[in-house]
Length: 502
Ligand code: NAD
Image (cartoon, rainbow, N blue to C red; front, side):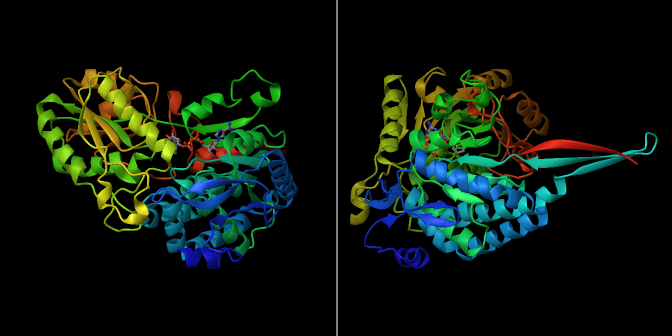
C-alpha cells in the first residue's frame, strides 16, 4: 500500500507519515499546523492531518461560494456525468482505497474491499442516476388554463461533517446528493480518519470536477468543524457523529440567533440497537447474522447490535452458542484475510469501551468472554495495536449503563424476556432509536413488533441490508431528518412552484 499511495499522492516520502493537505478551489493547499493520526493496528503515527481553523474554512467556503453559480446552472445530466466519472476512477483504485481505509480506520482490508469502497462507488452512481428523475414536477390544468411546474433549487454551500467509523462511505453518502442537487460542498472528515478523503481529492482532480465544487478541510471538530457549521455562507449542514457532540452544536432549536434557526440541519447520531429473538427464530441463521451485527468493524457501525433480548425458552441454548461464536472470532492484523476483527479505531476509544466492561461488573453483570487479547499471538508490529476481543455480558438490569448508553465497540449484552409486550417496552426503553432487528418465523409477529418499535429502521430476520431509496435515520436521540433519494433531495434543495397562464 505504501508504494501505491506514494504513486497516487506523488510528492510524498513514505518512510514518513502521509502528509495531508487541505483541498481548496481545486488545489492541494498545505496547512501550517498538523495533528498526528495513529494507525490503529500498530499505534504508530501514520498520517499528519491539517489542524485547520477559521482561516482555512473561510478560504474553502469562499471557493465553494464562487463555484456555486457555475455548478448550480449545469444540467442534472452534466452533474451526473461528473459523478459517474468520479465513481469510475474511484472503482479503478478500489484496492488502493481499501488498503488505505484499513490502515487508517483499523477495519480488515476484506471489509473495506467488499463493503466500504464499493458502497462509496454505489453512493455516487445511485444519486447520479436517481436524483435527475425526481428533480422537477409539472401539472397542467386545462379548466383554469395554467401549467404548473416546480423547480428544486440548490441552497448554496453545504457543510458536511462525517465520523471515523465508515470514513469515505459516509462522506460520499452526503457528498453525492449534495452535488447532484446543485450545491457546492465544504466537507470536514473526522480528524481520526482523513487519508481516504484526501486520496479522494486526487480522484476529483483526475475527474476534472470544476475547481471549488468540492473542498475538503481537515481538522478537529471544535475548531474546523465549528467554524464550518457556524459560517454565515453555509446554509446547509449535514452532520453524522455522536449524540454527545450533536448535543453541543448550536442548532437546530438553540435560541442563539435567528440565522441558526433558519439553517437546514440534518443529524445522524448514536444508537443502542437491539435484536429480539423469539422462540420460533431460526437459530443457526440468527447466530450468523448476530456475529456480523455485533462484531463487524469491531462493533463500530452505528447500526451494530449491542443488546440481544432472547425469549426465555431458548435463552440458555442461545447464550451458550453465541458465546462460542464470539470466542471463535479471529482478531488480528487488518491486512490478514482471516482476521474477522481488527483493532478499535483509537487508544482513547479502546479505553472508553473497556471502561464499560468495568461498569458492567460494577453493575452486577457477568462477562462471559473477552475482552483481553492474547498479545503473544500478534505479530511484533501489532503488539501496540488497539485490539480487544468480542465481549459478551449477561445478568445486567435494564437500567445499567451498558444497557442504556452507546458503547460503540464489540460488546454485546444478552438479556432474557417472557412476552412480546414486555420486550417491545424494554427495547424502546433507552434514549436512542436508530434501528432494531427482530428474528421470528411468524410473519405477522415480525410486522406487529416492527410497527411498535421506536426506531428509524427495523430489520426482520436480517441486518444491514440497505436500499438508498429507503429513508435512513433515527428517532429520539439518534437523529433528526432522514437520508435517501427523496429525503436527501428535499434536504439539499428548496422547492419553487411556477404557475403560468396558457
Ligand atoms: P464525533 O461526534 O466525535 O465526531 C463526528 C464528526 O463531528 C467529526 O468529524 C468531528 O470532528 C466533528 N465534530 C466534533 N465536534 C464538533 C463541533 N463542535 N462542531 C462541528 N463538528 C464537530 O463522532 P465520532 O466519534 O467520529 O463517530 C462515532 C459516532 O458517530 C457514534 O456515536 C456513532 O453511533 C455515530 N454514527 C452515527 C451514524 C448514523 O448514521 N446515525 C453513522 C455513523 C456513526
